[in-house]
Image (cartoon, rainbow, N blue to C red):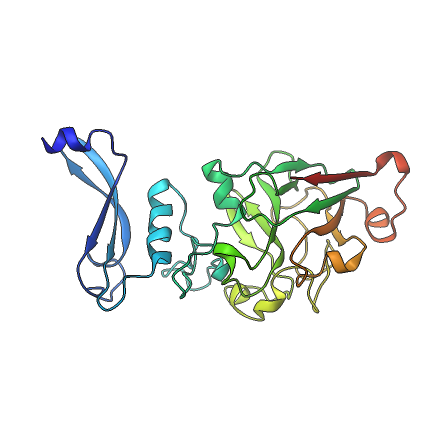
Length: 277
């Protein structure tokens, strides 16, 4: 009877009564995703506490459910003190406190097939207009750094609205993906594991610290694997449409030529404007 009732299910959720039992990461009752054998089948599951006076933050459930779907953990690795997570900018990293989980980042959505980024050739100067990604499936751009896809950038425009209302700030987020691992490139330029959680108003582009992402800025768009295409991501006028406090479009120019990107001197035949919606 149990086998019959479970036959069409893909996974299981265990919610146990009360507060979180045990505070040691890796213990049986620490919220986690794993598998359990039952009736000649291995079942994926995730486990979370119910809570007492208040229900467990649903952000935690969303995070563990993401693991059940096959997403990668984007929190800092506890056995690697120098590792870097994604902070409050992805539900697969830090959970938020208001009970409404923030969105998965563009890379996580791409892994699930929920987002289909448009691939941009950085050797051709392009003016790109991105609407907020919340609720959209195409408002994302992939810029190849390595032509074999081992390193690329994902650009998304995040707005403090809906499930993303808890974000520290809104604007353009630039994710560098190296060998299928996402790294957030914060506009403030603080490197290492502290980056996503400090000067949070200056994580999205533009900020008072940075309004461009090029091989000559900090952070730099240079390939972490060596070689690769030079990428220049610069603001595109009108500047007010690029400012993070304007909750609509962001406009950027993407090019692989320094003169073109910074001075706007590309041949007319090489210019292209694209809007995704």
